[in-house]
Amino acid sequence: MPPDISLLKPLLTPATTFTIPSKETFTEDFNNWTDYALITPLAVIKPSDEADVQTVVKFALEHDLRVAVRSGGHSVFSSCDGVVLDMRGWDDVYFDEGDGESIWFRPGALNGKVVDVAGGRGRCVVSGACNSVGLTSLYCGGGLGPLVPKLGMAIDSLISARLVTASGELLTLSADSNPEIFHMLAGAGQTLGVVTHMQIKTYPLNQTVNSSDGTVFFASFTFPPTKAAEVADLLNTAKWDENTAVYMLVMAEGETHTPQFVFSANYFGSDEDAKRALAKLYALKPITKRSERVPYTRMNHHNDGFGKCRGFKRMIGTGLKQVSAEGLKGMVEALENLIAEGAGDLNRSCVIFELLGMDTARRSSVGVYPHRDIDIWCIPTPWYTRPESHASAEKFGRGVRKLMKSEDMSEDMRVFTAFRAGDEKPEEIWGSQETAGKVAEMKASIVAEFNVNVITE
Ligand SMILES: Cc1cc2nc3c(=O)[nH]c(=O)nc-3n(C[C@H](O)[C@H](O)[C@H](O)COP(=O)(O)OP(=O)(O)OC[C@H]3O[C@@H](n4cnc5c(N)ncnc54)[C@H](O)[C@@H]3O)c2cc1C
Image (cartoon, rainbow, N blue to C red):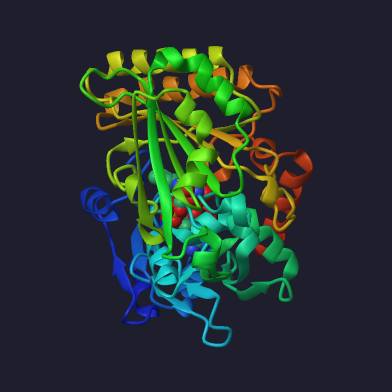
């Protein structure tokens, strides 16, 4: 028998919202990036302070309930059958008054808001490429984004955090305070408890993006499926410099639903230097190409459509060392088959490639993120609205991942927590059994009784 959840409400401060949802109200109000695997909880609590987070976690521990944390709602891991801590609204972002340069933010703060606040003061941050993702969770996982080639991973810019552990204790984490837990937080943060505050470094904007007006060069290029071999060669041989951030989508939107390779690139420097850095893309004779200069704070806006909430979407990603022409051809065929099977429902499905140079990131050893050797992330992402399409979506995602991996130099499955499906083996996520063991050990050591899952995996 579940406990009487209404007993929790009087323990909370009045500013904190407590709701007992029905399936319909929960799904509507939750407004997640994906409705896949949503579980209706006993209660949704929107906390407004750390004491309430502690109260909820302790209540859950006492009553043997799971707790799931929802910040930006861009994963399939933020609902459960116990209590959902919904951080939306608790989204303050501000500069540190002492040093005037680092930024603090609460877990409800989205990527775009932190970029805006930093840019507003002539500073920039290591962020993700999608404005609607929760920045706290992104930093917990490691964090990839356009400035990573230049500044390293997001966790390399993490200064401190506050964490309510799964046993309800509030800890300050930094290189000097609870350093071992801080080290785990940077890469395995979602497994430790509820992060309530983060402090990160910012960088001088114009100097970092190499422009006098804080703008960034943005370009996109489209290639037909017949160029699979040339595209594979480009992915394997192009050495982008630290000012270049490249992404590629294999997608079939448009009237004919023919799969195409769509590249988008940010360059931090002048238009002339950008064209030199991206020369290989221009030389491949794209069927469409465009470029513009955009303010740093609008750098991610072309991805807003992808960040939209609702519908069923899944990320079933893997890290690669190389991409074969056969693999890309097979992927195009799989996408064509998926679209044909979906009878209109699966047309927005795609495969995302993140092609961010990791040379700078490889110089750091902050945190437990284990995949700094990987420069190519391949993320099959089925997208649909009808539950009948679940099976085709699953087959596509798993099939493409397996195909790309079988064509890779090493067959070890490599999975970044941020792009995982949810059923991967710990050593696939943590790179080795040794790190997987350390993460599990750390988690166990700070969770008083391991029957409360404030994780959410
Ligand atoms: C459209 C899209 C674009 C993306 N782009 C990028 C990108 O550019 N770079 C990148 O690195 N990743 C990217 N990701 C992956 C993303 O960083 C992860 O999925 C991230 O965990 C999402 O965070 P969220 O807060 O939005 O989601 P949520 O579903 O709210 O949370 C994700 C996970 O973190 C846990 N969590 C949430 N809040 C807290 C908290 N306060 N304390 C502890 N745990 C918490 C949740 O329980 C869940 O397990 C993208 C994902 C999507 C769907």
